[in-house]
Image (cartoon, rainbow, N blue to C red; front, side, top):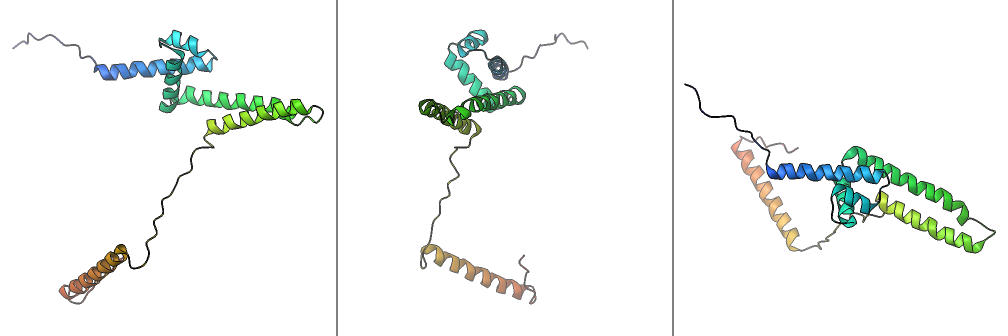
Length: 169
């Protein structure tokens, strides 16, 4: 028996298609930024309403870690900061012109600050909460009760197994 049904084209879900489009736009933003294109021009080229939207796409792309271009941009940014530091650091040590040395020192500090932020060196350290329980507290009483129950259960188990007590690793 022949079927009168014609093949139906199955389209991908709209959400999956939209995510693919977003990722493609973010990839394009990374490529343009790698080429030193200004945010306004990136926004226009990729179809974002503003330079802020283009920058947000850039940040999302870095977080998504579209690995290859993102790593290249990270390397390039580090190299830019290094070149700036190499330029300004000797000037900060200039003994002949105190005013110029002061200006250069401020630039070096700004570069160092930006580099530390970029590399995550200033991220908040992990904080640990420590709770100290003093003797006689409710938790101490509970621990004693549990220890008593464990000891009693071992004794009961030993009697049932004919005197063989279970080994605790």
